[in-house]
Length: 160
Length: 430
Image (tube, rainbow over all chains, first blue to last red; front, top):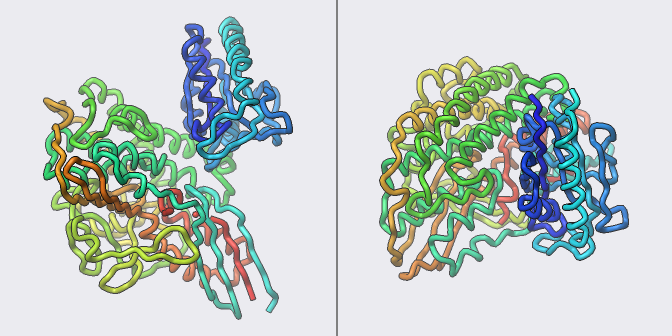
């Protein structure tokens, strides 16, 4: 059963350099998200996402991705209309990352009615490294974009 | 004979990174080397100088799949060093927390990681096209285990509610009630998963292993019991080092464990636990095992998928029994005073026996830590299995041989990132 509630998930490992951007943005959103929007952090367990988004009408994911040459550049992808571009496939150190979870959910027909990914081109996934300056500087832009998206999604009718 | 090389750059569906080198010459398997190339984790070193109370939170970070195993071995070892035995509701909650980890870890491995091998799919995503209901069951089992861990442990990955002496906070009966409802459904799903796996074509392969697991006087083991083998070992955790030793091998950053008596490999994990403790399983769970084609003793490592299924059913039943029995403790933990001492503990991680030893200074600072995880204990047995499995499958086409080897490795649900202190596959034929 879908509701008008929105789920925002910051995905990534905060101890792996730029992979920490998703959790960083989610932490900021936890303080400013409108009522009707829930914010979660997931550190790498993609399978958990499929259970996390059960019952939500719209889901916004934030994750770092391999760079296409412009670290910090933000790509907004409507995953119910567009395929996840191979070159932006988010990284995963284990078997079930975000990309695998999306593919599995699609097979099981468990994708939420609306699913948007903010993929941020990353620079450095070194263990223990801080988020690189170019990527960190994109955080505020993503927070604002996701806030606007969440507010707009809450007003939107949920597709059947 | 034509020279052939098979390469699998990274073995998937295992935790961590490693490689397998298999050399076949003149139609015979010459060498088998499981190379583990995760960097050494150095956890034993970074525990030195830290307070005894920090061990459960630090060791939980060794693994995202089985943090409870590390927490439970560390708290029991610390309590042994401090001369304290924990009983009552806190003991019950520890057993319940461990049930959650078995359900989550086994559910993930049986359905999402191992089943595709038996059905000929490259991964669970492709398998879901035809076996969607079972994949959904696997996800639900994982979630039930994770939810139990979250309620008791504060969160599902790297729980934060465990402390030496007990818990920071004990749950109310009301908090456990919805989990019990979820576990009843999980139990039914676990039975359907077990029946589904019982229909798989399982390779006909047996070996005469020395099985090692904990054995408790009354219970199927989680946190307590003697370390017992099928070839006569029966020691308390404190005497582990008199019977087992770890050896360095050049091709791996993980140590290889052997028995001191025979200098041979041994096997820990679900099959060992089941063989040594079949009589400790409730009659209806024994009945389900037999219905799935298992006997009281199993020597076929490929049947580990069935035994994990049996253990999921057991862990659901045991959780429900524990929740029904639970009365919150007067205090969630006992207060502990530091003292100099040495403490040991062995508990049963989903992948097998995990042993810890700590030496404490009078102020409670950790002077020395030793951690022996299941996968390093199993590494020698995995190599021996691979030699035998590859020999039996030597005439198979390269892809099929490689797949069979990967399936044999996954019999152990190896947790490579924990064992380094894992897997690319290369087959060299000459």
